[in-house]
Length: 359
Image (cartoon, rainbow, N blue to C red; front, side):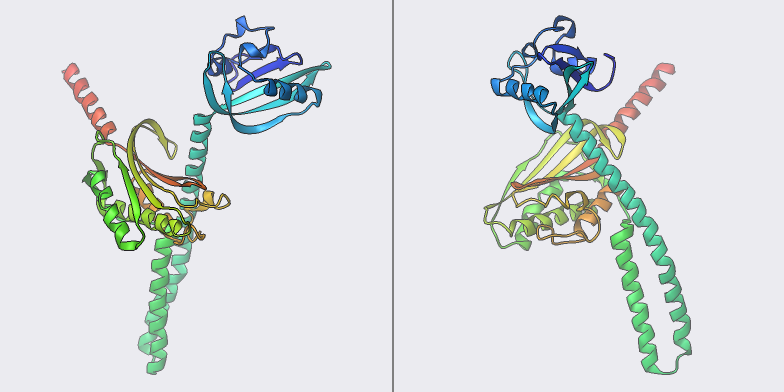
């Protein structure tokens, strides 16, 4: 039982320690062998109010729903984590079972879930685009065959309208559903692109915007399409400006870059990635649409463009990256994650070394 992968801890009706998985021991930084039969206060620095709550759960055979809280361990260590407490009975004996979820682990799982939804949606959209284009091509072809046979100019005008609207609809399908972009990658300093943001913000907003920059100077060049990635950042700028117009706060935008090690992007592990963050102090995105903001045509008073975020996601995805959003009433943060070519360089160096040693 100690080897189960969950972080599980069990205490009895006297709030004495009974069992902990190896994962729980490592997470809570205690030794179960030296804690067996001892009170829970040997693991946690519980306040009297918390102890009262635990006794209430036992008395009322109640459970504590999963939520994110701060826990206090012996030695003054604090941890923020998600956990739940469930009541159970065996042979008329009462127990409480703690199950802990590391905050970073929970965040990573949620991030991967959003990326999976995004991938599935993109696949569905491409299939739908194909199904729509087929009849459009048929309509266009039939109209082109019909037009020369018409002698009446008024009727020919109708065929021209059909052709024009068919082309417009086809372009719209490409923008909304297909989201395919011709990428011409080159080595680019992303900070050079970010430095164009203040001027662009000045061109789309008359309001004063305080801009702060927090760049990682060690960030290497990215192999990206400069024009398309600029479009992504401008779309995020448009979104932030629209959102901040709905508040009376002083407008603030923060631009940030960081290197991360050991990151999953669309379920693929990358040793090194770049994070480009675009943060505003707008009113935040409504919780009911936060998981669908990258879907085509989703909008609200905080997100005026129904296509901007969808197009941005399509561009980032074609670069092998992912774009994510965190939002609250104090503002919104969009993060773009892109693989770094450092990985390729490391692989090349390893290959050279291997070839040299085998020579």
